[in-house]
Amino acid sequence: MGAGRYAPSPSGELHLGNLRTALLAWLFARSTGRGFLLRVEDLDRARAGAEAIQLADLRAIGLDWDGPVVRQTERTDGYLAAIAALGEAGLLYECFCTRRDIAEASSAPHAAPGAYPGTCRNLTEAERAARRAVRPAALRLRTDLDRFTVTDVLHGDYTGVVDDFVVVRNDGVHAYNLVVVVDDALQGIDQVVRGDDLLPSTPRQAHLATLLAQLDAVPAAASGTVPPQYAHVPLVLNADGKRLAKRDGSVTLAQLRQDGITAERVRAVLLESAGLPGGPLARALDAFDPAHLPREPWVFTGFPASTGGMH
Ligand code: GLU
Image (cartoon, rainbow, N blue to C red):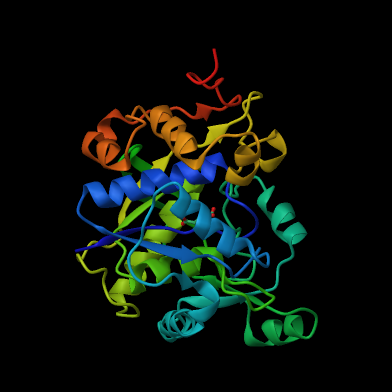
């Protein structure tokens, strides 16, 4: 049995967009007989107390998950092992570029859009030593292809840039594109459902997942599918067509509760926004079919006035 997952960053409370993605990830996993795991992505942007509130909110909308919650800050050994394997294979190099260096080099006429221009790829040992004295290095993956195609349940084949991306930042923190791949592999995750803002990073991640499996740096996912199955779901937008954010008013369960809207009602509205019946989760699970999911973002403009009740 493989597994799906939800991987929130504990930077604050979940809003309706996050909750909707979590619900869909749960439906994708459970409707295909997979396990469902919860991973707290606390390497970056962690805020004290946020994790407990996020988990309580996920439970409040009826989601359950298998096994203990995993936190990235407790998984350093796996990231170090992957970095060691990539290093031994000669696939890493030090990069001393600032953002500005990259922006300037990328505006050169022949640079591929959005790709690291390769400035530090072939430095000599003497050049590296001189630069190390000035600023700490990031580590980049040496990539010998420039594009990779992933297959996505909702987007079909998606081809995107794969460049020499950063795997360890110059402050020593393991980069998101590395840790997400290592975590998914170590947790036996073979289905990744998340917001479609992450689709452009997916070819990089899928390439790295393939490399790490080839190097035996991480065990192949339980079902043997590397890279995992992907489903990038549309985001929730506000009335201005921008990605929903906390400043858009009542968009968290706590705020909505104050407005008299229960977690059950929130779940019903989220399910209905995805074309599913709003009652018990088991009914939505029966009705769930990725082929019928809306492909467009859901525009949230506030809760419809409550029906029933007072006359
Ligand atoms: N932690 C990321 C977020 O909350 C999700 C990453 C993922 O699902 O791969 O946006």
